[in-house]
Length: 67
Image (cartoon, rainbow, N blue to C red):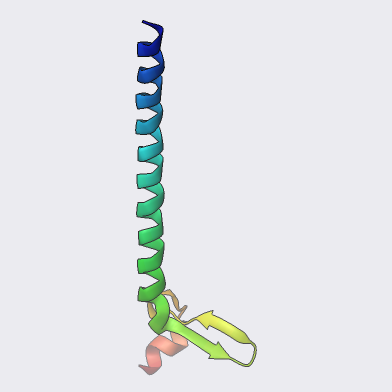
């Protein structure tokens, strides 16, 4: 009877570990996807590198009038 309790604990632990591994794997896949998607926006300069994302640029009122 005591062996049955130990087995159930192991099954529960394996389920928790599997769920945690699945969440970590999904997070890694999302991060890799974001990395490859943002590669086209990486700009290298003498000062270092930065992201030049068009939709995050702040435009002033004078720039809007010029376009």
